[in-house]
Image 1 (cartoon, rainbow, N blue to C red):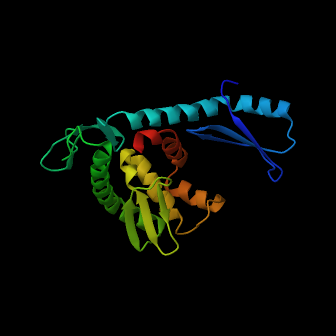
Image 2 (image 1 turned 30 degrees about the vertical axis):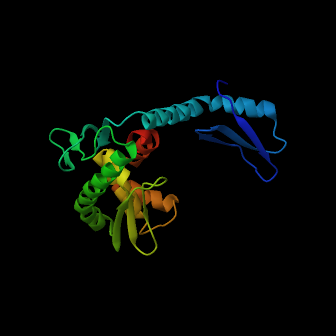
Image 3 (image 1 turned 120 degrees about the vertical axis):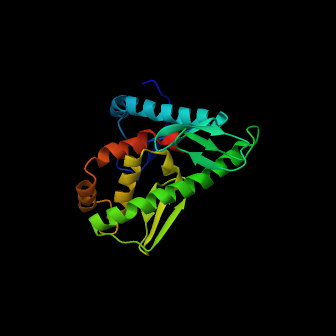
Length: 220
């Protein structure tokens, strides 16, 4: 094994699980587990752990570097600073910000979030009627904002929410998230019936799920 980990044992736990965070790798296991078996099991998970650690490293690297470009609809857009107004130029794949390039990264991100919110809202408003009609789904309110831990949701009160960071993903991935959330109108749980609905209206949902899972550091 080429990775270090912290082992946490619990008398209540019945299964083994791995969590990979910036602070390190933690293995959760039942008290009294056979360490020989555990080491052999961890060997089978080495590639998965290394991939997760690589993603975390890239996210950390991106967080330290000054912003020069961001993804919009899955393509790299150059950032232009000190502009008279903020807007997205799709033809030339540029994003104009009013902030100075020497300004804080937080101010750049704030401006980007505002642009992403408007742009994604416009895209969603253009796509939702089509999927609503196809799926027979309804919602009361559309809400777009930045979330740290979810791409979208549909509440029992009909609030349909999407993460503004989704704008960084290709349109086919955004469409998957739309289908995913509208499917919750019919089935709230992520059970077999739910995934049947998703598959019916978005057959390649696994491909989109994998994109969100593996390319998140390019989006957020």
